[in-house]
Structure formats: C-alpha cells, structure tokens
Image 1 (cartoon, rainbow, N blue to C red):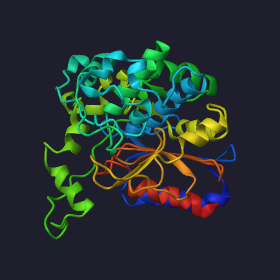
Image 2 (tube, one colour):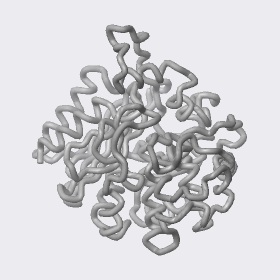
Image 3 (cartoon, helix red, strand yellow):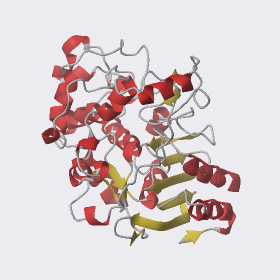
Length: 383
C-alpha cells in the first residue's frame, strides 16, 4: 500500500472505517498532479469464501460508469462524428417516435429526455442485448417535455447514450472503452468485463437493512427529503421504477451475476479498481483522453435543482455530476460521478486531484456515502 505522508489523515480515515466495522473490503486511490500519492486497500473481497481484497481486486462500480460513457461520446463529438446539440433522431431515426424528434443528444447526457423508466418489463434474455432495450425506449413517450426538467435516468441513460454511440461508431461503449481508454492507458477498467476477470471481482454485499421509517425519522412535510423517503418505500414511485427495470434482482446474486458483469450496461456496468478509476480521471484532467476545451465545456453545469426522480437537488454537465446534494463537492471545480451504494470517481482540473473509492459493503444510498465523503474530505483537507 502507498500513502504519501502529506495524506496521512486519509489513511487514518480509511483504517478507522475498518476498525469500526463499516467496511467489508474497500480501496481508495488518489493522484495529485499526475502522481499516485494514495493507494490503499484492505478487507475481504468475498465474505462467503474469505477471499482477501488484493491490490488489483476489481468491483462492479454502478453509476460511476456514466462518466466513462459520457467521455466515450464526447470523444466522438470531438472528432466531429456527432453533434451533442443536434437531435438524437439524426443518428437514430427510430427515436423520433412519440414526439421525440426534437430531443437532443445533450438532453440525454443531462437527464432531461423524460425517459427515466423502461415502461415495458425487460426480460432476462435481453439483459445483454443493449440495442433491444434501447429500441423499447425509442418507442416510448417522454414523461415530461424534454428540456424543461431533469430527472436521474439511473439505467436508461446508458441504453440511450450507448445507442447513440453505436449508431455513430458501429461499436458498443464497452468496445470503445477498451480500445480508446483502458487499453492505451493500461487501466483495469471494463464496461462489460471479460470472463477471465469475473472470478477475481469482489462480491457486493447489500447494506444493512434500515428500520422502517417513522414520523420521527422521516417528517411528513413536503420537503425534498420527505418525498425521497416516501418514494423509496413505494414500489410504483418513479424512483423505484427507474432503478428497478431491467431488474438485476431477478438474477441470483443481483449485480454479482456473470450476466450483469458481462453485459456492460453503459449506465451501471463498469468493473474497475479504485486505482484505475482514479487513473481514468487523472488522464481525463491531464488532457490525455479529451481535448482540454472539450472537457472544460462538458463539466460546465447545464442543469441544477430539484430532480424529478430523486427529489433532492442534482446537477449535471454533459454526463458528469457537478456540485449538488447528489455529488459531494469539496471544490467548485470538482466533477465526476457517484455510484449506488457509495462509489465515487472524481476529477478536479484546478486542484490537480483525481480520486476514486470502491468497496463491496454497499451503503443504503442511491448516490454517495458517508465513508466516501469522509475520505474525499480528508484528501482536500490534506492539500
């Protein structure tokens, strides 16, 4: 393990999480001005077998995937192959159905398309057939007028953006990640993991079940947190519908199932190590993946405020989270993406910071966790 003395408080926080029983297995990595200054890992990768978390243990990182998928599309845009301000239907004609002819690629990247839910239940046989799921979305009518509001497209984001990528390039997001990002940079980062990597992937464990909310814990008022709490208990809420179809829970082990790991869902299908996810952001802010002006424009906040799906405030640039309740923002120049259960990937051009947190004991959180927040805060306190 590695920890520059300047970041000793990061190691203290990381160790305390294990000492207090908050972690099962986890890793945390930080680059500063291109130098790896923190590379920590500890614990158990699989509680059933006792397999330890090793230096190169990868894990399914849920929605941290979205930033990588956005970057793939932005690479195509930087090459003039797609215009993010143009209608999606220019490259995907079938998408114009049900009044979606004016929906732009930017609407997809910023969660403004009004398609946060796959209305038809996706059969298990289609879980690895991403164009088939995209076709279901192409036939749907938006739930709100695109461009007038934003709401987290938890899973549909990837099928929508991924299909634009496929129509433009003829390749999947996962294929382009391997060819354009992971391969050239030597990263253990896959959107659709190879079969030989599956056995060493950490096994996710759901967070501890919380007690049923009461009026003492969840107020009955009309504030955003109350609405979010109520939505989490309602199986028909927009939040649960957005998170639950395609339903990983229908497979034994959920996200641990080989079909999910292989499928490469571009919204929540990345398998990576903390070091490699931090390495992705190091290369991104260093101009190795996108032209610097392209990244500067992409991380500019396009939408900010109440989220139609999550209820609390969220903010997005072109596929990247920016400062809001859903993304702990220790610096106004930080951007990145969280993943359900507590995963974090973050880059900060001005501060020269790139970091990532991965683990397998998931928190009861759609976005971020206190463990990841404490580690990130410790990094910025150490600068």
